[in-house]
Length: 197
Image (tube, rainbow, N blue to C red):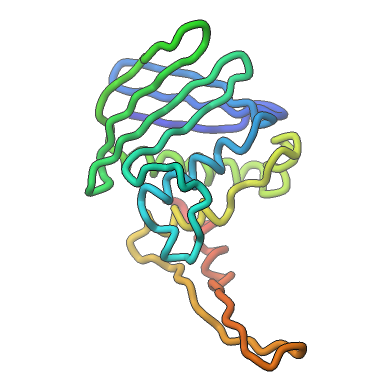
């Protein structure tokens, strides 16, 4: 099994999938929305790790055991539907192509952790190759690299868990009451970016 997501030109990314003896190639129009952002956010919801970092679920419509990722190829769309088991290590994957007719081109089990590693590896490669601003420019300014979600997912996959959320008590001059703010360690975040999975 292999999932590889990468930039292929200004405004386009490509997803190459190898499952058993089948190969699929999909072109993702970055100008149609934040596909990578939506994927990473959905993964974090399914893994139930967003609460560790005090990030609210912006996508309440996501089933905690089911993730649907839609790739917009402009003339058609492709849905990748992952139904994840309770242990979060395996998933039933359906790939449905929507063009003139809806066609399920794959329906089978995958190793979910292997998929997660492939996605983080794809993100690592894009960040190292283009940088954060370069990713933004290559995406035709349609969205930033989903850095926070990428770091949280990468932290989840690493056994030592270098990142954690801390609460700090700040007192602002215009307010007598202290306010509680959240922080992570920037050095540890930079360490995670440079670390290969």
